[in-house]
Image 1 (cartoon, rainbow, N blue to C red):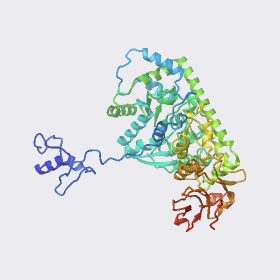
Image 2 (tube, rainbow, N blue to C red; image 1 turned 90 degrees about the horizontal axis):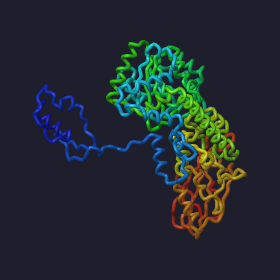
Image 3 (cartoon, helix red, strand yellow; image 1 turned 180 degrees about the vertical axis):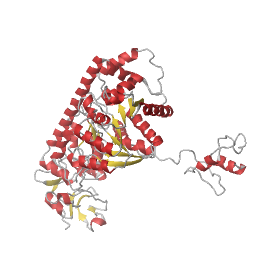
Image 4 (tube, rainbow, N blue to C red; image 1 turned 45 degrees about the vertical axis):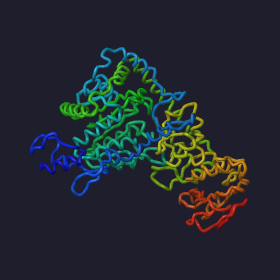
Length: 611
């Protein structure tokens, strides 16, 4: 490289001087290829001669990325000072005092593992061999042919996330087909793991939306359309986030479709035992594929079913056609693991190995897992029952805000009690009852209840102490509540001082209006004087205005019902979105936005009909 090129490269990299001149063909850190790979960023100011202007630092060009839905809800919950807040984003299983539980069998296994010799010895690249063996036996069955014939390659990982990441790394390095098919919806982290490796993702239909169950027809049709050699991500049990699983017959049929289409199955098994309460039953999907002759891979996490959330025991295994192929895969996994975490953590693996190897402890553990599953189902039933007990007026008010379903097949579907009743068939740690992002935002801001943005409810966070608050809040205001704004005679009530002061929250997108209303309600000198009501049938009109008079209080709040008719509700209820429009002017007047019409409304104890 010529000297001038070297000096330009040095300046571009922010270096001051090279120790020795760079010779052509030498092994110096700077090369033509390296120079070509450099891309200037926003923190550089490159001038015409190739030099860099004023230095502004290494990180000023970075922007804060958006967090995933789980971390976002968790951070908001932690920052909430409300002592009665409810975190429905985390998967940890909570007791009556809202503490993460630890199973008694796991406590005993921990005691034994701590007494073992070599407690702090570094592990091999493959991890704890006893743990890995017990993990693959739990997934495929202790008598599985692939285990007997030595056709399984497996390594310990840092829970299920690292198992997925290691598989994605393996795919990126060794597979020609840089694509993976994922269920719609799936765990948010699945998207990010493959996205960071620039592996293309496509979705297949899985969740039925209104049916609250698996979209079996759409699922099989999408499998049949995939190209040979492509990879399909599957969740064998306790599907995250929907709680909807396939039965054994469906797994067997899916295995045949994928075998015929030469598709590679990758299972993410994070909640074995917590769907049906039976560890073998929850692995029937994995075993159906293994028994049908598939080459496949399985990621396992033991965080949930052992309550070892912080210890992160996990495993990644491959089923190969021959023992020789398994040896090649095993070595490849260990080589890649070396550059990721080198030696995986030993403590959690020793605990799980002890738990699965001691017959008495294992029997106790399996009984406790079944008990956790039953508790989850009881919480699901209590939550759904709270929704089912809502009045007919409540359900009509829910419909008034539009269908909450975000993943339904038809946008014309309207919510009904059947939707929540179907949620009783969901299994595992999570439930979907149709909350949309706007409703979730209301729960965060007004109720200190924190599901994730996609409406996923983690049942482990619902405890006896908050079980009544959760469904009550899910049923309120914009959600499903016995809203004070919905009267017995099918009327919409604009409240006076004597009625609920937070009624304005029911208006969609009305955070600013709510604050203004609260100021008005709390103003003892100038309280509102009347309540105005309007029949719901009149919502069918294009524009209806009515005023909360404020006496000497200058701004007049004008609540606007803007008709945005939705075809799915034409036959029963006019499905209008509720919005607001107000503007502070001199005197007791409010001029609505020009887009809504050129109207000037005077303050008064009446409802103004603008025609």
